[in-house]
Image (cartoon, rainbow, N blue to C red):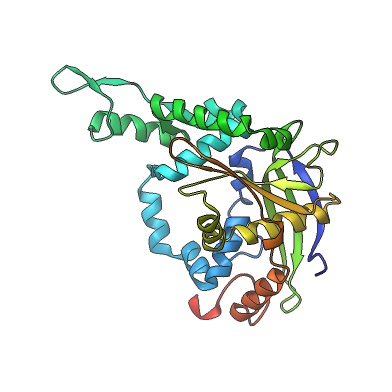
Length: 298
């Protein structure tokens, strides 16, 4: 068993808002050694370190984003997944994160018509809400998401998993790369940390929605999206923080009716060698310990 690569680990908060989790130190961007690595950042880095770096340093891209002040809508699958996750783990934040679109609007002819993003009136209204930090959902989508969330919560084993649990638990830790001497701060946001008095006391869990919850398709999704790396990072950090958690569970649900549920114990898929992969990639792009920067890309 590989020694835990993390030190100075601690559980920071539960019921953590997404804005808090996603935040970086002021003025810090990719390429700065103070940049805090999250699971998604780490997986992108492992896939292609230089692409990860360039994406954060490309001046033209940054200027384009600055000129376009309107946040882009989430994809349908992203919106569905985050909405169901919020309903299950942070229902108190629903009105802070989501805005309900009207059912109808008045078109250019002065006639009431069904709400549609194809209309400039509707589109401008939705864009203004996104600029204020909301995601816009239709009443129909919200009702379907509530149905899906209730079916997930009603599953007997998942019900035991979440009973008395803490949700959206943020933890931080430091990882020191031996080859470069860099100390990299990492943080994770764990969907479910079960009650220590319950049957899942040795677990942490991450809720996932997917197109196809069959066993074979789920295995491919784990590999494609790096969920095994996410599991390894979260388990290592909570263990370094003193938590006796050794199992990683994925309660999954298909994102289309009838919202079929699956329960996956992916503890055995956690890669013990993953810190070495991180170190080798850091060393490959960092001949000197000056930050996450490839010198010839300056």
